[in-house]
Image 1 (spheres, rainbow, N blue to C red):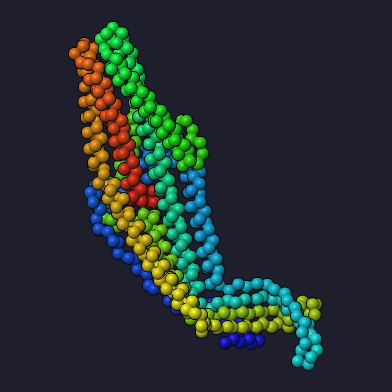
Image 2: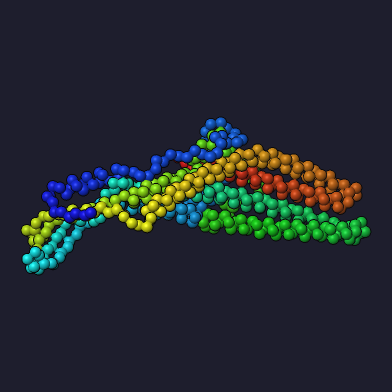
Length: 466
């Protein structure tokens, strides 16, 4: 039904105010309650009871070069920039949704020429304010659309924080990987230099008949292996440097690259304590993002349900009316109108019911994704916690192995020079020491990467922010 009435001056304002107060008085969205987390209440192998205080990024990263690179990445990384721009877009979309909850008032000047009841052509000019198609949100459709947009904004903001946390840990992981590659490259070059010396010694022994051609060819083969390892590690180090530059968003200064020197070990990162309760995972930015997406989907159900009820819209105008242009300023008559329309679908081939069903299924999908986010967070944290002690034990064992192989090589070399050991024994000792040294580098890197993984799994950057 519809109506159009010219009213007294004192009625227009109260009617519009009443319509605004009635808006959203009924909410058809399901009541939201946070779903129970489908994970155990306690984290496995946690090193501390209760809530754990995680270090901030500046405290976590103890190398000033790495800190500078992280700052540059946060300022220049393009993926993070896109994530932040998505937040701005979501904020603008929320403003658009909120604007629909209020009337849009426009200043307008209009005119018409039409026959009156006597059949005479008359001119009507009007200047004033207009309100066009303002929806009285009795059933909460507009409100739920706005609530969904607000939750989507919070989800996007959480997504940007998740991207920030991922960037921080990825820059650190790439930097440490590059440092390990450079350390392995230095070891490979030492091995190659040692095998070059061994080859020269073997050639001398062959010339004097103290060694066979078989030993000579074996030595040359081991030297070729060492050269191949050096080439492969040079390539890997260069590719890691390129990956680091992409993350940072600009060329990396040589002063900020890992320098050849003492090996990178666990002291390069601060400790990452973990509390006993799995509730701390609910503050991970990706889990927050999943929950806000669920809240938005829940609000969409209310909007879809409200569309099945009558939609009431109001239009109105208020201003000066005259039959001449000069009369609009001098002698025009004040008048205003208010029109209302209530419309409800009688036949829509099931469109509204399908929209409700689609919204409900969308909520169920968001619920499953939220539960999966919590389960993934629990697994990542549990894996990193379990790995902490084993990585420490592995590094200690590899250090003992390296020390033993170094002493074995020293003794074998003395025996070889004294003629008590053959070349095969010497080469075997060299090969074993090189393998132990490479494995120690990889074990130290694994411990560092696991600590970064634990920091990320606990939502470190998010929780450490003031």
